[in-house]
Every structure is written in structure tokens, then in C-alpha cells.
Amino acid sequence: MTRTPQKEVVVVKAERLRAFVARLLTALGLPEADAESVAEVLVEADLRGVESHGTTRVAGYVSMMRSGLLNPTPSVKVLKDAPSLAMLDGDGGFGIVVARRAMAMAMDKARAAGIACVTARNMTHTAMVGFYPMMAARAGLIGLALNNGPAIVPPFGGTTPTYATNPIAVAVPAGGEEPIVLDMATTMAAGGKLRLAAKKGQPIPPSWALDRHGQSTTDPEEALLHGFLQWAGGYKGFGIATVVEILGGVLAGGLFGTDVPPMKVFGKDPLVASGFYMAIDPARFMPLDEFRARVDRLIRQIRSSARAAGVEEVHVAGEIEHRRRAERLRDGIPLSEVVYRELAALAGDAGIAFDLAGPA
Image 1 (tube, rainbow, N blue to C red):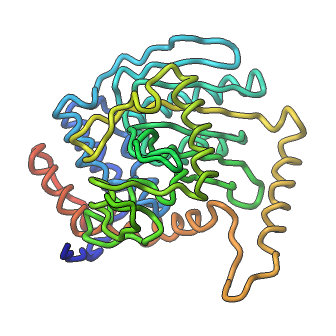
Image 2: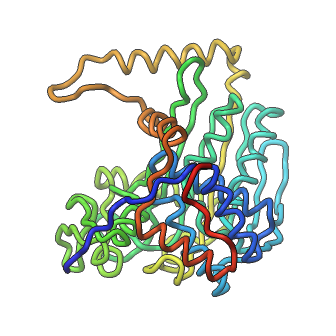
């Protein structure tokens, strides 16, 4: 397949991009508070360099809203509520909105009980899963979030799509250092990275996916439409994904495994997900300042490691994203031409001003 790579040609300020996305979604029927919530998560992903889960997703979300695959005004129900746990049903609404509510509930309960978890089912795409445990870390809590989704990846050694990329994220508050943030798919790469590469006309690394014949491929469309993503660490990645499926799907009372509809094209096929959100209050174990200082010490021990040949710096999980966020808050977010044009077209269709260029 011949590809014409797209260039990153437009740099936009984060606040301007956030306001535009919120205004667009509000114009299309999403309640204002929910639109602002979705915009915040998407732009945060772009700031951290996780563009695969940022504003590139807006066009797909709009398509889902227009086709009835996403309920813009859901009636989110609390199915169970106890001192240290809860269960939510998202009524087919924005996964971002439901997941934020679930994590906020887990945080409130953890402050009272020390540790708490909340499950959520029957929702759509939750975007950057790391956003939700970072909510907890900013409040001095340890956060964990994970979710399942469309059956697009087979079990290790199998060929029948059974799981999603089953991401898992953990965030830990520090003191003088930035929080530790692990945010990862249990496959070699998130499916969104393949979709963004396809949108930009770019190849993917050969380690990410297989084609329809089970051979390594650098063609993201071949992998998404006919092939499979590969598990990170082989059977170990698949094992972690199974734990995600149990907590995020089975325990949540939502769809799981092959019961979840598959998804080939984001925005045009159903996307049903369930999730699990946990918060832990470290102040129940020791004074919070002491815990933060201990995390700082661990971070500095990691950074002070002797470096392997060719390695300039040893990083802690989340450190590169923290740095990129600071840079992009200062200098702006680079948007690829294809995403910029998508947003412009959506603005025209919705009858709102498209004003991303220029100073914030």
C-alpha cells in the first residue's frame, strides 16, 4: 500500500483547543459540563504526547453520537453503594464521563475507608486511562484504573479475537518529584496508536502487530482490519490482560470476552467497555509527607542507576510525559494536518467558529 505521510503543520495552544472541543461537543448535544470534561481528558492526552487518545478521537466520537452508538445524555445509575465500593451503569454514555465519576467516587470512599473501588459497565471509550489514577495522585491518593473493550485481540497462541488491548494505569503521588504514572496497554501498543498511524499514512513498528497470515506487518490498516495486535511480553501480557478482563468486565457485571462486540473501525462500529477504578489512601499507613518523601527517594534511586551503553538517562514511569506536558503547555500542541482538517470540518458541520490558530 502506498502511503503519503502527513506532516505536523499546526501548533495550537492547549486552552484554545480545549475550549473548541468543548464548544463543538456542546453544539452537538452533549451537556456543557460533560463536554468540558471530555475536552479536558482529550487535550490532556495531547499535552502528554499520547496523541492516539487525544483530539484525534473527536471525529469518531461525533460519528458515534450521530449514529446512536454513544448516548450523549445518559442516565448513569448507581447499582450498588457501600462504604468502600460501588457499581455504576453508564447507560451507553461517554466512557470519559462515567470513568471520571467512578474514580471520584472511589476517591471519596477511600478518604473515609482507606481503600475503595468502583466498577462501571455499559459505557463507551474512556480515552487515556492514565487520566483517572492521576486524579487520585493529585489528591494524595494512589490510583488504579483499567478497562476492557471490544474483542479484537486473540488469546496468546489463539486466533479468535477475545479481548481488547485491556489497558491498565497506576498513579502514585510523590513529594518534590512528579507522580509516578504507569499507563499502558497490555498489547505491544494501544490500538489507537495504529489508528493514528493509519490516519497519518505512517507505518508501524514490525513488533506491534501481525497480518492476516500471522506474519509481522508494518501496515496499520492490515493489522486493524485483518490481523491482530501482539501481546506485550507474550503470554505475560496476555495474563495481565486476563486480570483486567476479570476486574473490568466480569466483576463489573458488564460484557466480557467474546460477548463484547468486535470493532474494526473506530466511530462506525459499537464500542462497549467496562472498567475498574481503585483509590488507596497512603495516609492510613504512614503520614502522607513521609510516604511522599519515600516515593521521591525511590524515584531518585531509579534515576541514579548506572546507565547501560547508549542510554543517556534512566526514566521513571510517566517522567517523559510530564516533561512533554510542560513543553507543550509552554510552546503549544502540534496537531497533524489530518486531525486539524477533521476538526475544521466538524466545526463547519456544527456551524461553530473554527479558531484554533493564533495566540490563546
